Image (tube, rainbow, N blue to C red; front, side, top):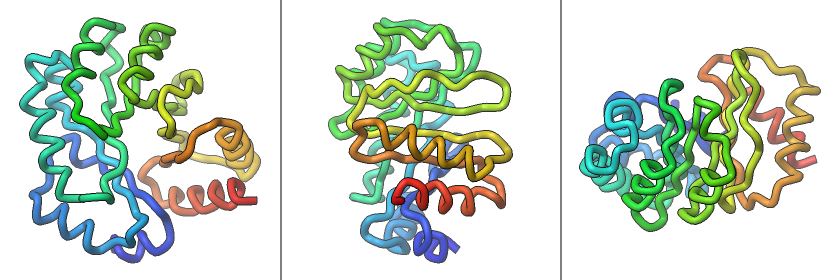
Length: 205
């Protein structure tokens, strides 16, 4: 199934890592089953985002475990998404200390689900660390601002349905950025592969 998918799309977002990290042997199998240019985006453990809530002293061991295991993916490891809970409000000192935990080449993206985080000092901290602000479109609220805090972008298109016009507008919006790479993912629904191919088609036209 993975090999079939990877022949048609260039990347996948892995969500079960939020609950449990696969064994190294499984990650190595994934890497071996996919083309050279394929990339795995990994959702960071809830131990980091929801239990430790980005507190550096509590999350340090989990962050180290996460990146040590993801090394099994080699060059096919893409971004690492840190999705914060909606109840976690802006805490710049906490974020700054957490960012210092991340290893070189971390590829971290942060999905803030509390609007208090959408502030210039947060963007500056992300930029200084080379981390991306995740742009996530949801049914229940307006999407966060599109702010380029890294040379690459991470976009989560989470509505249940998209028309071709919707996808074309997204393609044009993303093309207007200076991002060298864009990782865009839809909800894990049967419609997602078709939406992804349509978005890619508009982006290349």
